Image 1 (cartoon, rainbow, N blue to C red):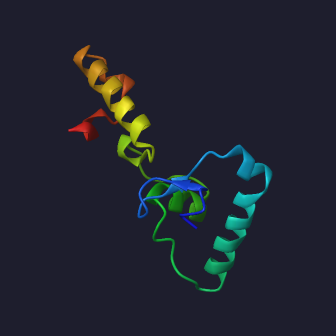
Image 2 (cartoon, rainbow, N blue to C red):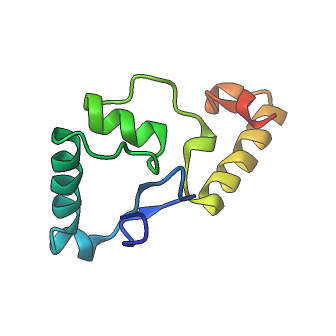
Length: 103
């Protein structure tokens, strides 16, 4: 499933990718049904999903803290880290709630 294009990030830390065409084709619904069927029948665990995505699937919401490092897109993650470092330098760390994860 992680090679389907519906997910992004490292294979052991995959998150859902934004793909409007796949959404139109109902690809996400099909994958969701596959995951649900596997879970209901005691199939393999969701080892390739990020902890944040797995929590969302199982509990319907994220119960733990989400950090910058949970962002699967490396370009977005590194850009956000630069913004956070800049804000910390300006003594505005409240703009980056998890800025301490940068160090």
